[in-house]
Image (cartoon, rainbow, N blue to C red; front, side, top):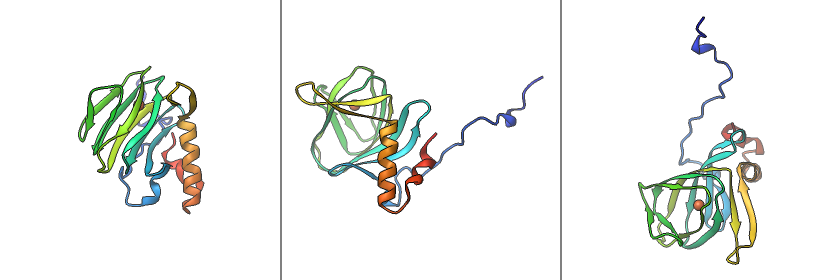
Length: 162
Ligand code: FE
């Protein structure tokens, strides 16, 4: 007997949100003049989707991906020092697992890119020394702290978690 599709009750709730928010408080500070805006924090699958916003020039981080990353440039441009291409507005970028690269913004116009990051970002210094990492759980924690500090309450992040 076919299962009625509308009775598949274990699907997690869908999520629709203004990606670029009207409320500035949704941008979580990550470094000076660098923010991320959480869209989906997939604590079950171990990935996250966010907008990265940068309002400065220079090196942002040297990092390695143990799992894939997908990016879509909404505004501005950026590149990796290790590659000879520039990601510009409207470009799609696939970062394969194993990549080690140094993110740099050279144009002083605002940069906004949507990234879907699987697994983790592992940060390295210029001598290859590990400096730390981010994963969906550190991202959730950063959101909790920030949303609490701006008066939205730490549980505000829950709407983005699946
Ligand atoms: Fe990367």
